[in-house]
Image (cartoon, rainbow, N blue to C red; front, top):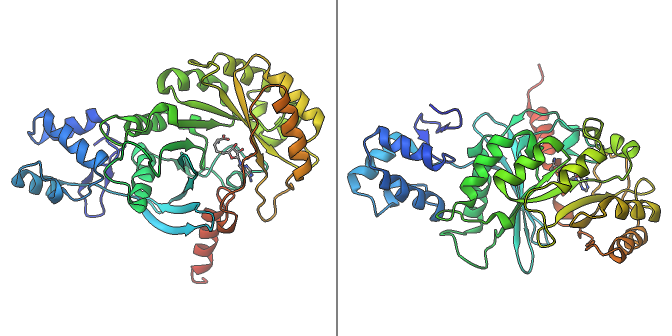
Length: 368
Ligand code: SAH
């Protein structure tokens, strides 16, 4: 049994998240010809069907056999919160009880799903709430794909519409560091991009990293997705503190990896994320240093107002400081949109929902 195969609670094998080769091998093992795997792929990933009985292009007997041996699973929904601004956040559970968050952000011209890659995180970025949780484990490819499948179920988006989708874009920007779980992320994204299934193009997928420099080239070459770098500081001194991974891969090494990103051009720019922290990294001098750092890199800058959480050691920069910063970056020729905070009423800081759920579980436990 492939280690990425999930088991349904009743012992049937879960087909969700198998790639094409694995699915074909699975069916070959029960004597079905290769075109059956293709038909099944269509039902699972284009139509979103979870019940074999509804797969009407397959012979009845074959449907019954599939149903006896296999399941097509989904993560369970532990919480489902909808913000007044339309942002929707799910806390999703997996077979071993671990939970991650997925967030849908609807906008006028697109709908973005923010997907998690790990349960918890090892990076301990100081401003990030998930950074206060320890890493529990990597997500498997089925668990990453499962986030997309479940949220599309919830949004009623089957079969895959060609245009005007509620989920048109994917950002690997949820909990965890995707470049520390590269193989599972790569496998999941291949399934998500497959043109006969979910079919979200690599141009509409962005992978965000805290700066695992040695993996960046592979990300571009093998996945070809858009790259976002969580920069947040322009000196090693400050970045060492905010993003401790910087001690391993300092800014110069990270920027060199960015300059060499396969496929980089003015039409395909790297996004540099910069969280605006009051009196920490929000001065005009910081903005000018940022511009110098980006010289020669096809880049855009995403200014993110700090999203506070209880006990966080920072405050958000003022609107004036953010506007001033944005203007300097813009005047230097870079797009520098300020990301409007979304879903403030539903525990928006990444990881907060999961922490709240953990706390609740602890307090539910009977006293010894
Ligand atoms: N590990 C990856 C992806 C997860 S974080 C990475 O670091 O890029 C996704 C983005 O949200 C990162 O840019 C991160 O720095 C930012 N972020 C995390 N906590 C935040 C907070 N409280 N306020 C604003 N942005 C935050």
